[in-house]
Amino acid sequence: MDTTDFSLAFGKKNKHKKDKADATLEAKTPTSEADLKRTIVSRPTRDDTYENCARIGIAIILNHKDVKGQKQRTGTERDRDDIQKSLLGYGFDVRPYNDLTFAEITDLLKEVAREDHSQNDCFVLVLMSHGAEGKVYAKDMAYPVERLWNPFLGDSCKTLVNKPKLFFLQACRGELLEKAVEFSAFAVMTRELEPPAATMAQPVTYAIPSTADMLVFYSTFDKYFSFRNVEEGSWFIQSLCRVLDSTANFEALQSEGIDLLRMLTEVNRRVAYEYQSNTKNEALNQMKEMPNFMSTLTKTFQLRVKRKT
Image 1 (tube, rainbow, N blue to C red):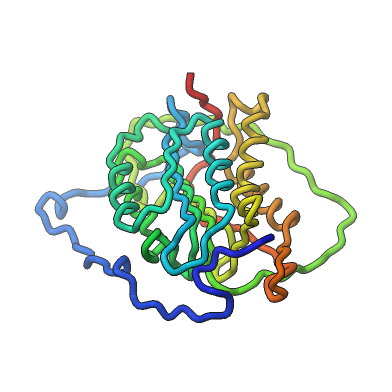
Image 2 (image 1 turned 45 degrees about the horizontal axis):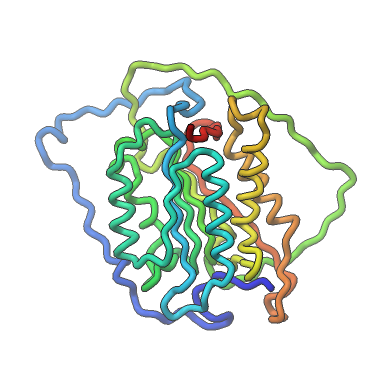
C-alpha cells in the first residue's frame, strides 16, 4: 500500500505555530578595513568538468520514522538500507542517522562542514522525513529546508568550494496531488553517452557565488504530495537506488564516470512513468509523482566509482 510523506493528515490545514528554526540573524555587512580594501576579480574559465579527486566523499543519511505529532513513516527502513548500500557501492563514507532532533541535526551538519573535504569529489546528504511547503521535519519539529545546505555553502565550508554539494530529499512539499495524463508515441528517443570534455587547470583565483555548485533533488514538485510504499519504500529513493546501482555495475563507465544530470533525469523518468498510487483512500488513489531538481552546478559532474581498498 502507498502512503504519503505530508506532515499532516490529508485535507487538514497547517495551523502549527511558528517554529523556533524560523528565527534568523540579521545579515551583517563587512566593515573591517581589510574587507573594505579587498578587491574581488571575476573572470571566465574554460574548466567545464569538476576535479577528479582521490576520494568520492562523505554521504550523510537523515532517516526519520517517528516524528512528533505525525503518522509513523512505515517502510522508511527499506529506503535507508537501500540508499546506504547504493552509496557504499561508489565508495562513499556513508553515515546514517535515525530520528535526530533539530538541535542534533544542526550540530551534526556544522561538525561535518568543519571536516576537510579538499580531497573529496563531492558531498551528499539524503533526507527522508515528513514535509510541508518549504519545510521538513526532524524528530521534534519542522524547520526550513535550507537549514540542510546552509552549513555547506561556499562562505561557510571552504573545503567544498568548487565542489558539488548534492541533497536528495524524500518528503512532501504540500498537499496537492499529481494527476495522471496520458499520451501516445510511435517512437522512443535514445541518447548515447558522450565522453567527458577535457579539463584545463589554471593557476588563478576565481570569484563565484557562495550558493554555486549545489544541487537539490526533490522527490516531488513544489506544493505536491510525495508517496512511499509501506513495504517497498518510497518511489523516489527506490528509483534513485536502481539508477545508482545500474551505473555502478556498468564496468565500462567506471573509469570515466557518468554525467550526474543524466542519471537524475533517468530517476525522473522512472518515477514519472513507472509509478502510480495504490491506496484504499480513493482521494489518493491512482495519483502520480514528479521529482525535480534545482541546480547551481557550474560544471559537468562525472560520478565515479571509488570503492575503498
